[in-house]
Image 1: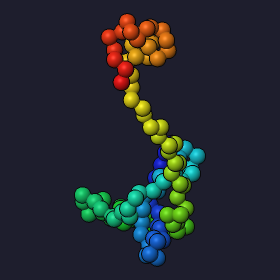
Image 2: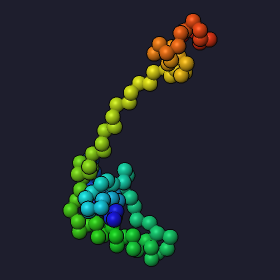
Image 3: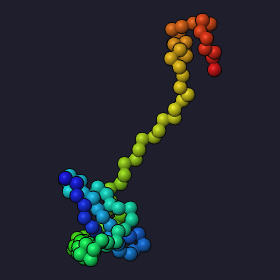
Image 4: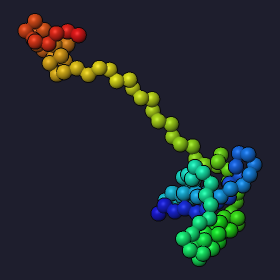
Length: 106
């Protein structure tokens, strides 16, 4: 089951912030929020719970963005050449004679 919690991060500038960290099926860290998060709530009770969750993050080891898994690099995109019609393909393969075709060579 995928899960998450709040974790303290030491930011590149040395400051500390809290981010949401996401864990995979085996409990491994798979990522975190791009930006730090803040406590919030629609009610005072929800805000108090949010603050308690942030306090719980203080009991865990501090992370850095360097601790986050690197995103896989995507394969290089192939350049797409101009598409041709099936009749043009048959001409190129020699399956039909271009002189009998209405398609002009481009």
